[in-house]
Length: 282
Ligand code: PDD
Image 1 (cartoon, protein in one colour):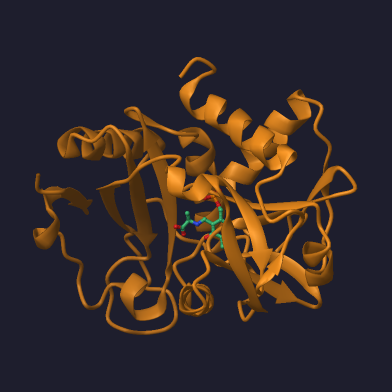
Image 2: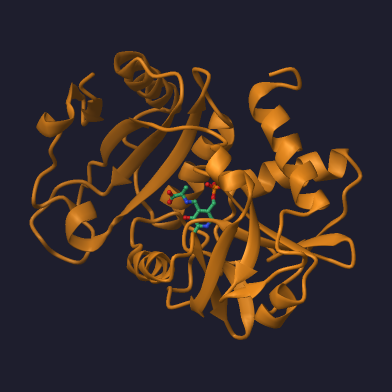
């Protein structure tokens, strides 16, 4: 079935969904985005994603393309028109169209584009764990804002792909910040560690929800930085993101982590997250 996209007030088939060459998203990456999972017809953690969209927009002084209620209507309509039960919804807000000039246009009108693609939640291919590699974190100093300026992330992911790995964990000042498109976690001495919220990492929604689920289930998580050597000597490691939820990491740069298979803490957190997405009986 043809995919339907939304661009600035119009729903159309994907090939007809186009933006101007003078859109500031294209020219300056002057834009923010969200990726939201659609599972069994429901947009997972929609409120948290829309709250982060507002934070990212405000961080760049970017106006809202419409009201929150209007945005929810558009997202629902994109889901409805695509007739999908499981998918990944992508939405981008740019500072709109204007003759190319670095400074903001006098009266910017934000652009909104939304797409949805088919996707399988919790694919069995990821349950047995993935490899990661590490690389220098080349990004700017506001990685907490979800902007489309993703070239360092693109290069990191390409490096992972060329090494036959699933993800690249980025290292800044001797500390693992996060993956190219996911948050990074290890289990050490029985407790879980992930980088604290700061300008150096994206506050992942999966991360946020997993922290709540862990707290409710008496699993200790320490929001503390860790080093690449800590990963190599960790008992377990995993990554989180909207597009992969909770995925065991079983090696880094070719070195096996723990027993080289998904560990008990990771498996438990993955189950808790699955219950959160589907409901305990799902
Ligand atoms: N990526 N860190 C980075 C750099 C990310 O790009 C992402 C998400 C995350 C995890 O955030 P969340 O749990 O909210 O998805 C962490 C999305 C999925 C993407 O760019 O496709």
